[in-house]
Image (cartoon, rainbow, N blue to C red; front, top):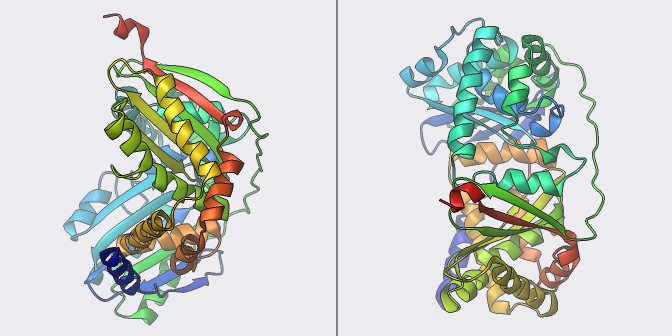
Length: 437
């Protein structure tokens, strides 16, 4: 316990406040600057407030498709040259998409900061969206879906949970979308999607790292981004889901697996709420590591399962809390679910120990330090807290929420959200034709 206390204090001491400056350009683009001269690298990143939830039900996959399409080239960067420019100047780059946002970034030696800013401004102002690019990236996305979803064991788990948990909200479809929808889309539809969502007033630019000359950096930002015309204000539709009041039962057959999995999923509130953070801590308590309650009891002690776990799938509008278990030997998935339920009932009726609570908080202190231990992590956190949470300074203060959670809150939140009549039970099983072989 003494060692744990020392480690906790060390983590807190190391977790230095992240300093930043933020302002708006006249076209509505938000800018966040973070200077860290500890290493001669700088990241230029742009997060757009567009994700899979902004798509039409018959045109899913657009947001993820654009993650790929906007590397095709611009009016001033020839097709196929983007990655060559980055690597030849000592940089790296990438992008990723969720249901709520799309994020692009470059990491360069700090003497190439202007290059990074120019490239991201080119992506925003001068993208070339033509049929050859659409056709090329269509094949790339199809291959990604085959590798990561269709041919990946348990690759459809999240998609199947979402499909059954949401009936009205666009979270009900997979982020990667439907290949049939992408095939059916016309070039004009892709161009219209870009015009609507890829605008400066729907974006936040983050520059983080070794910014040697702040005044010059601001001049470059104005030069490359300030002249981009503001887009039309986006009218976002609000979707709500009726509470789940009785168990939803579903079945999915996966041809890539031999061992069944039982999944219990609960719909949870927006990641911006305190309740969602408490549910994060419940997830960690139940299943983070081999010393967690579920693993120790069901895998180690009773040897009923090959694997059990729980995780929070946090999103801007709603989240999901997902438990899963894979039986071992002759054990059945129903028995695994009963054991997981027993641990939840214990949480709902008994306070966890002070020692367990402190252990949880120590883990969140460590996670907090780790998430801000690199310039890349800080840049993405700054963008996320602005774009999805509406409060950039959460990069410094969100840890205080976790620090303030009480044992009573953990019990009460478990009672509020984790009841059998409020969940989906999904039997994720081997495909029958394969199981019979």
